[in-house]
Amino acid sequence: MANERTLSIIKPDAVKNHHIGAIIGRFEKEGLHIAGLRKCQLSRAEAEGFYAEHSARGFFGELVDFMTSGPVVVMVLEGDDAIARNRAIMGATNPANAAEGTLRKLYAASVGENAVHGSDSPTSAAREVGYFFRAIELS
Ligand code: CMP
Image (cartoon, rainbow, N blue to C red):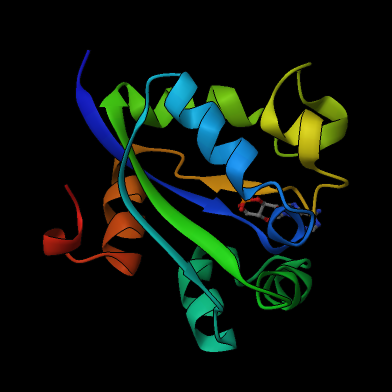
């Protein structure tokens, strides 16, 4: 199994609902190392750039509105198979389809407001980690 880094975002709904500690605790309990972490308020330009691959989708405006509606926590998770493990811990994008015990089942209300984001591939992880963190900020 490869040691990987992946980007995780605790979205505005989960921050507002005071789930930061529970979500970070879950990652640590599952053996994922927190290699970098920052709480921040995204500008529209930053959210649009991060989600650029979805810019043609009908929900893009809603997605940017939501991601800029309050602070987020951006993190780099590190460990064996971290990309797939993070996605398993998060559960399906739509919480209605998420398995019991996953973060989205526990904390998300809808497909638009779904508590957490996680990189979906090694290519995305490299881009997304680099979008928010410089190498010197990760350890
Ligand atoms: P995320 O993993 O952050 O990546 C893209 C996001 O787009 C996704 O989570 C959802 O929150 C959002 N998304 C996907 N489909 C829809 C939809 N039909 N309506 C609103 N948002 C969506």
